[in-house]
Picture (cartoon, each protein chain N blue to C red):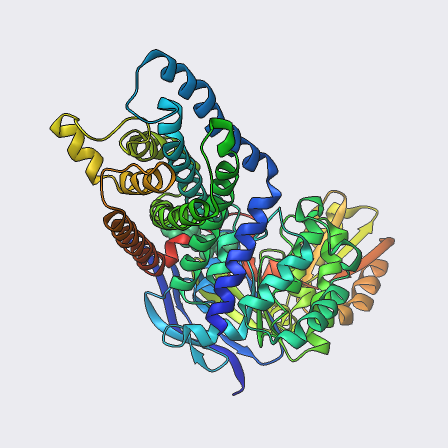
Amino acid sequence: MAELEGIYTIWLRETKRYIRYRSRIITSVVSPMLWLIIFGTGLGAAIRFGDIEGGYQIFIYPGIIGQTILFTSIFSGVSVIIDRQYGFLKEILVAPLSRPSIVLGKSLGISTHALIQGVILLILSFVVGVSMTPMIFLASVFIIVLISSGLAGVGLTIASFTDSMEGFNLIMSFIVLPMFLLSGALFPITGLPTWLQAAVYVNPLTYGVDALRYIILGEAVLPLGINILVLIIFAIITISVSAILFSKKEQSLM
Amino acid sequence: MEYIIESWDISKKFGDFTAVNSVNLKVPRNSVYGVLGPNGAGKTTLISMLCTILKPTSGRAEVNGYDIVKNAKEVRASIGIVFQSRALDDILTGREHLEMHAALYGVPMDLRNERIEEVLDLIALGDKADEFIKTYSGGMKRRLEIGRGLIHRPKVLFLDEPTLGLDPQTRENIWQYIRKLNQTEDITVLLTTHYMDEADKLCDEVAIINQGQIIRADSPQNLKRELKADTLTLTLDGGETFVEEIKKKEYVKEAYSLDGEIKLMVERGENLIPDVVNFATSQGYVINSIELEHPNLEDVFIKYTGCKISEEGK
Ligand SMILES: Nc1ncnc2c1ncn2[C@@H]1O[C@H](COP(=O)(O)OP(=O)(O)O)[C@@H](O)[C@H]1O
Ligand SMILES: [Mg+2]
């Protein structure tokens, strides 16, 4: 009971923090819209793309949702580094609360951030002309929470190894950007050269984007069940790893 | 249990460097106990071990009867901590900090609001409680942190350099809060400081720490009395020759003139004033003023370490 309330408390603080930094919400919705409207329209006009009605712009819509979740989740996870620099992490770590509960509260908070952004993008689906039904909406929300849980674990794991925001550029170039480009957000993942194909399938985000594309556009490479299974396993692994790291490295985190 | 904090040869090494070296601390229940020492003496490291933040390399300690390694969670539930560096979130309000703390420490729901109001009252932050921390002054942040540490009614409150970097007025206020707290609540306060006056005025007992070792621990009065070195400061006409003559007195341990004043190091200075005055008059000197000073904790520190506390520990 005490642990549950602890998880809730940590979640509540994460959520308040997110909602109060309005500029972050705005920028994180504006940049995917720019991708969709400018990049989607521009490249869509230059190439003849597949057999989806609406062409390239609609094809990348689920991919751009995936991208937004990726950036938000990793960034929020890594923001633990900021908590540490401002000393606030100590207040949480010295509380009589188990480390896994702290990690769980954090990742629920992060999923909430991703969810808020995903929902905004789902509501804006009319901009690119994708039809949205309550069923599609709910199923997408479910996938968004799954993807962001796994990515939150990645962010928290990185945070437990990094003690300053200087490492942030490295994280962007070596983790976030490759995950985005290799997820099939911008191009179909069939018919690729083998080396690229392999890299794409190693990337957990691929399964999230594929699932979203199935739910929103009715098109996918892999069965939905497989995608969901991979996402669940990914989330369990990364959150467990970060919980273990937080317990083990507790001393150096304070 | 006479001592609420007790340690047995507790040590902490960082690599080859020993930050805390076989410390035996005995903190009486309901006291205000000070750990006084220069920067780098190992105060934060010592307090971090007692708060279960760091694991000792060797030795052991108990806080509120619980072992700091084996019963870390029970220790955490019995203590409140105010860190040397700030541990606040700019984007939350003061009240939210207190609510969050109450929830993390499992304060029963029906008691929470009452406790929060109580604490806000104690730290005199009532009208600022619902504003964001970024609008708080340094002293207000400190008071909030102290108040937060009290929400769950801890048995021991740890304060690591509670008045570091605060202006004299605010320091005086915080001392008052700590005293009031110690008088009204069933609480023991363990604080670290490198301010002599803080240890002297605030603490019932002081442990002097240098290079990771406790050199002496006693009440400030006893520590100072032990020095047996009062200073008599005189101003009179014809100082230089007077110094040479008074030096012949047996009770004068040392005499010198400094900036036009004559300083005499003596024991029990209050009993010697008449004799000094008589001696001066008989020798034809006219004393303009005479002043008696008892030693302070700085002198105690110098006696045991040969350096000033305001300098880096050697
Ligand atoms: N994590 C650490 N790794 C290595 N050395 C440390 C660490 N923490 C403290 N020290 C060293 O231990 C000594 C005591 O530090 P500290 O306990 O912070 O002193 P104080 O609080 O009395 O100023 C210092 O010399 C400091 O450099
Ligand atoms: Mg310190």
